Image (cartoon, rainbow, N blue to C red; front, top):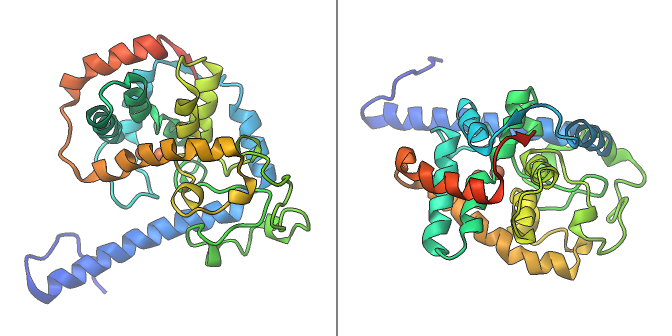
Length: 274
Ligand SMILES: [Fe+2]
Ligand SMILES: [Fe+2]
């Protein structure tokens, strides 16, 4: 069994190569979720939350964080094989075209994945990227690979956490739900800590943009309030640009930097605490 390093030009070899590389990619994605679903527990999330919630790790501007991200490859995402900052600019520019009057929303597009700097602080991929889900209650059906990845998670055997509502009251609101730890919650904390001058929709979109079981599949409604349902269209709106911009041409970052720097200066200027 050879390890083909170069794509064959044609014929059977070419399609075998495709299957081989796609298989490898899926293995990598699955493996990230297996680790995530084994280790993301209530205790783990509380620990990470305490560790990062004080934003006392380092100081840098939003632009510096964006540039740092280029050192990172997201192992949960099969679609992206270019620098992360391109994805940030593409998402922002997509939003800008559709919502020219909402400059704060353009900035959300640019910032939404900045929490991935967690990976550069030494966190494993399964504690940074990928779809999120609530810990402390039973895992619902739409959680990706959920059927085969939770068997070694101790919370699934906990008498409270394994129930439908788990540690939560019915319709307690997502703001009171402990989500699996990752770049969404971390960036939300950074935005709060540094008093970003953005509307509440902006904070909400960043905090729940990877919660696909909810915003894409309609699960976990038993934990939601009316307010969550009012926010849902915003999360879906961001998701539209987060997803489909991944296939587009690469943006001219040099040319766009001035505009986005002006938004940063307006809403989250200077050195930030991370
Ligand atoms: Fe993200
Ligand atoms: Fe994204």
